[in-house]
Image (tube, rainbow, N blue to C red):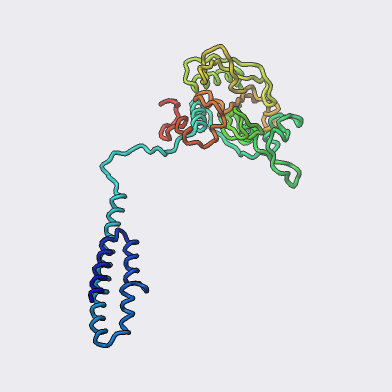
Length: 358
């Protein structure tokens, strides 16, 4: 009997000391499991005489019930304590002021630049136009007066898709000019559109990527001339760089789809690693432009003797680098949240001329 009493005290002490449900389960198994200490004593009852077995059995059953009850009581207490701890840990103090979320998304500089460009030309009356990234030969090359032997058609410069059953091949558009063709085919002049989008060429270095972004503009009517083009682009450059005056120059150039053609340069200087537009003694080309070639107008089903107009195209990525000081174009596509935290824009700030572009 003394051994039973000592075992009872020992097991009850272990139950009280159990700090969690796992430790309590270990105590239960060691006392009441198949090989437990109390279970082992129960197995010895068959070896005793009837009178001794009756007395010993009653005492042992009482100890077993007491231990089981103590374990159940301790289990309930531990479960309640665990629940309280969890509730305390998950409690939200609604009296705290809201805190800025450091993981909140940011507007990518390229998206911001496109919004700024669209906003500027939108104020000039340009409508937004879009087209497919995958184009056919006619819209990407032929309709734009690009001859069959032109380098842009070569495999090393252009991403072609597998040959189709009729022998033709689709291409990832090399510029957004096909949008101009589709617009002239589907709409009656006067036309005034701005066409931003992704373009693709086989090129990659610090200032070029295989996928990049362009914005092209098109104006078609009966009286538009080169003076309108120059004034439109000058106003755009001043507004985009947020300067009262930007020295610019137009250099004669060649593009198959415009005649005459020109490249527009802006004056700039380097201040450390940054480029400052509008001052200095150096010139940087930022876009190409010109009067739409009569062959392009004719290929779209319009009469070049009746209609004329101008077109221009610029690289969005390069404009973003110039304005916001990003030194390497490849960083635009690295998905680095630290870079985005520095160069990105708040999604709550929309680019418009009334409140400021950036």
